[in-house]
Length: 165
Image (cartoon, rainbow, N blue to C red; front, side, top):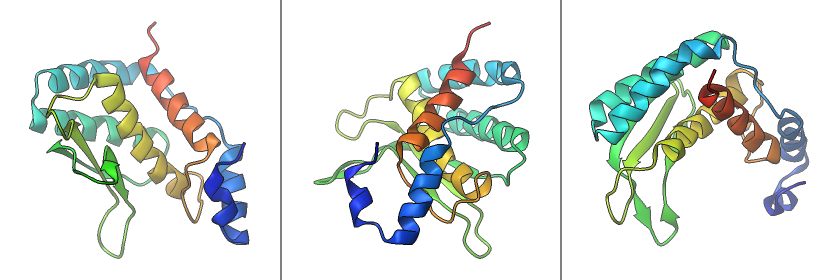
């Protein structure tokens, strides 16, 4: 399945899109070591502790990038999501540029009601943005697209981290 925007891509972008779409999972070694961080993240988010949420997110992302042997990415957790007539921004990935390291920004509160985001949605957003980083650093794709494979990779990471033993 290709998404509608595929038809607007040039031939090189279409090749990258198809390459991305082929990869449907990212095996994460020793997922049990992440369980304490998942628990801590859930508690920090529910407790509405922005700085603690950011610190635990950074630990989690550091662990995942180390496990996958890719360059690190900096995490930033902000308060309420930005919004406009285009909708609400859940997360943002900025790739490495010149001397600036790659950065993931996520927001812990909804834009309109300023309520703390549900934990699973928040974690999926973090993993979604991390997925863009992995497209560049693990899969060596020159661009990162929202493909069916991309969403399956995000889901793969989520289910590995949430798996109860």
